[in-house]
Image 1 (tube, helix red, strand yellow):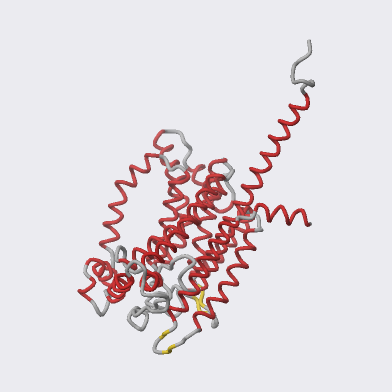
Image 2 (cartoon, rainbow, N blue to C red):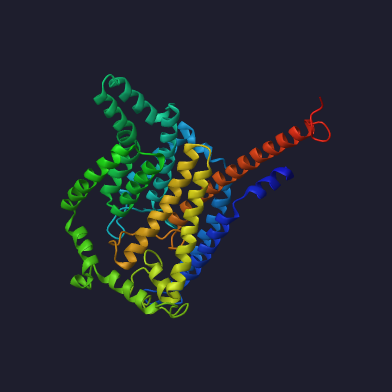
Length: 423
């Protein structure tokens, strides 16, 4: 038992763990600073106290996930249960009370849950498992049933059918079976930011797993067409939010209000900031500064230096995740690590883009920084899964190294004394 504990401690990924702890410490301090004045209630500590509770739970979930074999998610029954649970939670949001114009949350009294945070993880697991099975030629679960059905109905007897089957394997099956059931409900909420993230996760895993070059040409042609179709179907509210990016002062008291005050925060902070706790914008000017726009408060109080530190830590996590993905022995492990790193990258880019006016505000949280339980707890669990993959990689590399050293020693000991052959 003791030797097993020492082995786990030796292979534990401390870089991921301590980087997460530093980000959470920054988050907790900034959540307290950003929420200290809430709706006229000065010295408000409710957000800070809840964030401390979320921090403790997040650390526990990270450590638990890091010591549970990530292969457990590959079981078809367990995978199906995860999918059905997350899909059911999404369905339940359609009957929930709208919050900020969308039915994306479930209220359990003492806390709120945003099911799409879990859906991101389950989608990564599903896509990683699908492409691993596709590579091995062994399909199971619901995706396997659909795959076998399509291949039975359309035997590759001609070049056209082979092309159609390739399109079904690469694009159609993962889109219809794994993404579409989520996307339909998310569109009904509506949560356009969440749907956009799921689409980007799928696209990034396609590229990472080696999408044939012909589909890249198809994407180059079809992407703009899809964009034009989406543009033509935007609601009046969505169009106003997009217009606010280019000229927020057209609706300075409405759609452009958050962006204007966010930019004021950034400009006020300058290079070194105005000092921790000295933000002016958090006093009722920037709505909900502890959540989507917390980076604006960091920028104001800690300046460019504070923003650089936070982004540096987040990109370090992404880099480590990609490195772990590259070292993994299977497509499944590699795509899980890469997919989770992609979620951190995508959400960071969207959140920073929204605060600086590059993207419309979509309610996307900044990983490990924004206030909230759903995002932090799921993110910490996912990072724990990446840590587990890292531990297995280290164990495998150490084992191969020991085998090679044992072979060298065996070869050396088998030579006659003096190292020369005897005639």
